[in-house]
Amino acid sequence: MLSKSIQGALNNQIKIEAESSQIYLAMACWAEVKGLEGVANFMYAQSDEEREHMLKLVKFVNERGGHAQISELKAPNVTFKSFKEMFEKLFEHEVFVSQSINELVHISLQEKDYATHNFLQWYVAEQIEEEAVARTILDKINMIGDDKGGLYLFDRDIENLTVTTAATNTPE
Image 1 (cartoon, rainbow, N blue to C red):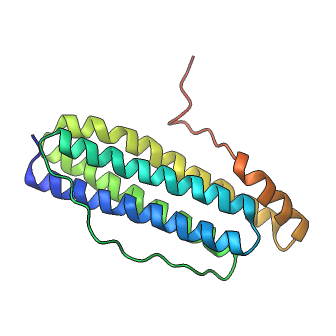
Image 2 (cartoon, rainbow, N blue to C red):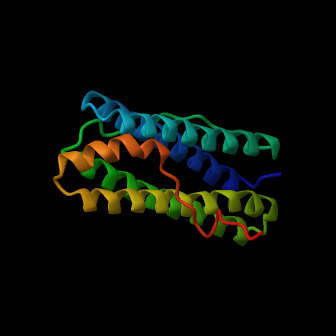
């Protein structure tokens, strides 16, 4: 059974994950109309992934005797000065999500809700990966600079971007 405070915190995270999906979707639309098909496809996939993160939380809350709440979402930014700015905003958002997950972990430990704490460990590892991907993308964008050929290659290659982190790299 979930406490009221943990249920409230999880419902807040449901909203954050839903807004994350919307943010990525808005970025996908922006990239698509700018002719960045690879970036757009990457963002569409990220949007779907964030929605899956939200649904995982919804099911957990309901399975633990709580009631997942679906609330109104804040409208995402839909325009950017450049694709670099868009990815900088993405990185800032992922850091925000990580902080929110960390706060949830803290609350679960304070309340000695070890089932929720255990469940949240997947999100902790996921956020390590999300931040690493965003950092890798920004590093690549900084290498490209203003090179249009580099942007073309980046747009082509981003759909296949993989980043292995310590959290996802399991020893054999």
